[in-house]
Amino acid sequence: MSGSLNPSSLARLLGEWNLGAAPAYRELADVIRLLVLDGRVPLDVALPSERALAATLGISRTTVTAAYSLLREQGFLSSGQGSRGRTCIPQPSPPGGRKGGSGANLSSAPGLAAPDGILDLAYASLPASGEVVHRAFASALTELPALLPGFGYDALGVNPLREAIARHYSAAGVPTTARQILVTSGAQHALNIVLRTLAGRSDKVLVEHPSYPNALDAIRAAGCRLVPVAMPAAHPDTRSGAHSGGRPGWDLDAIETALRQQRPAMAYVVPDFHNPTGRLMPDAQRRRLVRAATAAGTVLVVDETLRELNLDGVASTPLAAFSPAVVSIGSLSKSHWAGLRTGWIRAEEPLIQRFAAARTTMDLGGPVVEQLAAAHLVNALAEPLPARLASLRDNRDALLDLIAGRLPGWQSERPDGGLSVWCRLPAPISTALAVVAPDFGIRLAAGPRFGTDGAFEHYLRVPFTLPPEQLETAVAALRSAQDKLEASPQLRRSLGAPPAAAIA
Image 1 (spheres, rainbow, N blue to C red):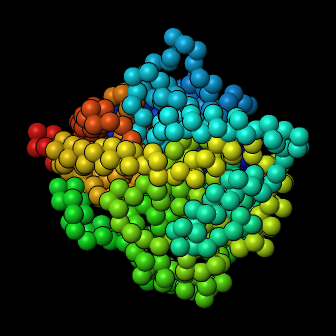
Image 2 (image 1 turned 180 degrees about the horizontal axis):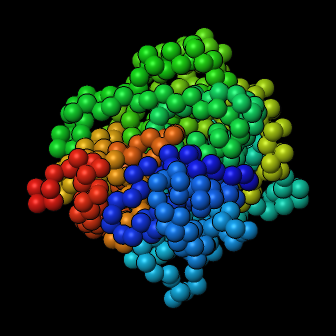
């Protein structure tokens, strides 16, 4: 993608960037860097000229010049004529060559492993369920010779895996045949295939707000227009300090209104342990959602990648059971291992054929050995789950207790499942926290990454994928990062916070 960013748009994305915790040029560079890493400022985009940005922000041109110079030094801004460098991602530093200074490392860069000494709270993913995955690949290698005489290209996926996925849906109450399954290279690949097939440029796509960041990126990249519908605020009894009580669910009245008035071509929803809130949509709301989408002529696309991470064992019916027109996306990335790169689409057979045709413009099929291994994992889907769920329950409860004890101003919604806690912060400092977090040994994904137009500065997603002892270290680091921000007089004035001595 190429283009340019006008100064007003960048100023809106920057928000309250000048916190007084460091020189202004460094704070400006740090926030721009985070916007690039978070994807809120795309790559290969020309930033505003120094003069134009300085005038818009009401600061000296020298400050902008110094900020851009620092971004170039760090590798986040290309060298170009004058001040119109383009955004980019730097190459990782060689071993022993890590750059110093606030924001000068790659600890928040998407797709890069966190450096030693950095606890990663930006990604909600688990390591492999080792022995189970290893055994599945060993079995796959014994089956591979039977497939070697073939070409190895299959846009639909190998039959053993498609049949295993179909049996899994049928057992869950959604009768399915292998002809209704398309195997993909993960859930993100599946969503891109669906978007290419169902939503043209400028078509509207309804999404929950907040939602999964990579899905929002895919929808934007497809040229579609987002129709965000806010998730209701959590009830007081679902926040940390009271880990039980009613669930807020989804705002079906707002969704029905948006579907009726906007008539989006497609709706992307995560009803099974919603990312980032961890909520589970009740069956009554699922029925209403399907009826409303059908009435609006909107294709309902359901992301079920977290469905198996049901921490409290609450029963729910797959959305596809309420209508054959529902398109379901699944994956083994969260339940078993992201390194498998195996996902799927379940839909009616004519639509699967359309997806397969669209898929061949992107790739000709997935790797065979991984699919054979995945078939073994799907056939024994529950094998690693009891131990994983028990560990995740302990992690979740430990994190909620730690937040309640160490961060009393935070409000944390207790998730029904999934891998993370969605926290409301005492002030709109999510981006600022993400900027300073590497200085305290943690990596964060800022709240606005989960929304549109700079929303969710009051929120932060905190995964509980780490063991309790590391979560304790991470929460202590969060408190230290917050204390650093609260110590800034400029920040206290902008947030209306009490004097430093009165802050708990």
